[in-house]
Image 1 (cartoon, rainbow, N blue to C red):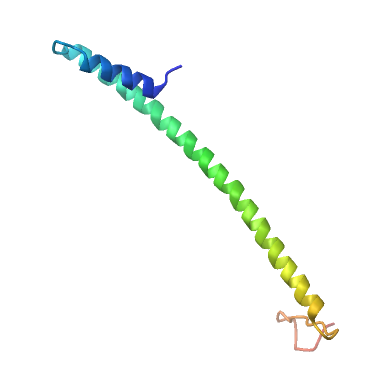
Image 2: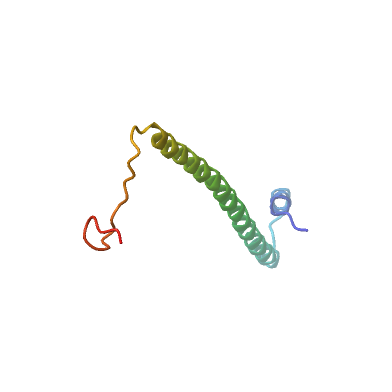
Amino acid sequence: MLIASKELSAIATDFLSRPRPVAIDELRETGRFVAHLAQLVALQERELEIHRLAEAARQGKVIIAELVDQHSAEIIRMHREKDDDKIIRPSFGRGPKGDRS
């Protein structure tokens, strides 16, 4: 299994420790290998992004559930505190006001 950081470190160490110039063919071969490593890193970055988004979604669900619980508790509290037994029913345009048939 390729590990990008180890491969790049090995390439850097190899190039920095050479006492002589590097042949052009070897540079091209190394360039192709580095391009493949870049693809590997891009895939790993996308995978990490997916995991981060999934975690954010999980946290968001928890926050939404807490907000629903808080608001529901507030509605229940307000309902219990009211003095009268009047029930207010909204009319959504289904006939004239007062007509509940």
